[in-house]
Image (cartoon, rainbow, N blue to C red; front, side, top):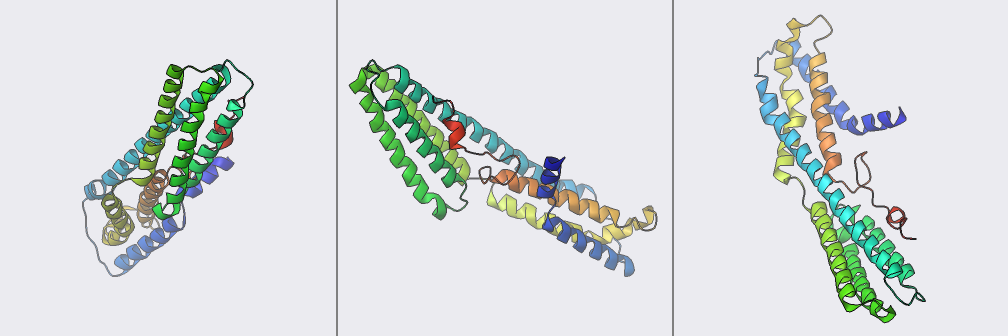
Length: 258
């Protein structure tokens, strides 16, 4: 029950209350001044709901792709660790511990990078990540000193390359999101629609029992602003705020490395 309430208050926030109050005020003013208009209902779907649902679907697809890329990163990192532990003929080395430490540092760097929103904030973490990848590449070359064949080292370098590709895919998902113009368009109409539809709500008031004429503006406001809040949470899948966000945990990443 607690989790349900937390999820509810993530999509019902101060913006919902502000737009709802403004919509009710608009409806009240129009009712008192006999300002009525029968706007077409389909305008809501065409101008608002369809673009917002498209944005939500796009953001969800990006989140699912990010999960796949994160799994690729983890899978190849674990493969390199297993190689450091099992492929060497000379077991008297610290390769497994060093590999685990590198993966831990890389994962922590990724988490710090992707939880930042603006590029100026995460550029330094990007440079640090590539430095760690370089260190991982050098580390893999040391495997030859402990009996790992050159062909197997080449395969491990391919694993490291795939980790870099997965990281770069995550970076692109983090940097490029739903088109800004579409988001701006949706937000403008979501926030002004319940207000400018005051004449419509006033015109339909006669269809309801006394005291219920404000149900429609409240429902419209709650539904539209809630959809916008859902999209906002999905838009930034790494900020660790929403219930559906991707949480990059370095301890979970290395938990299988033992």
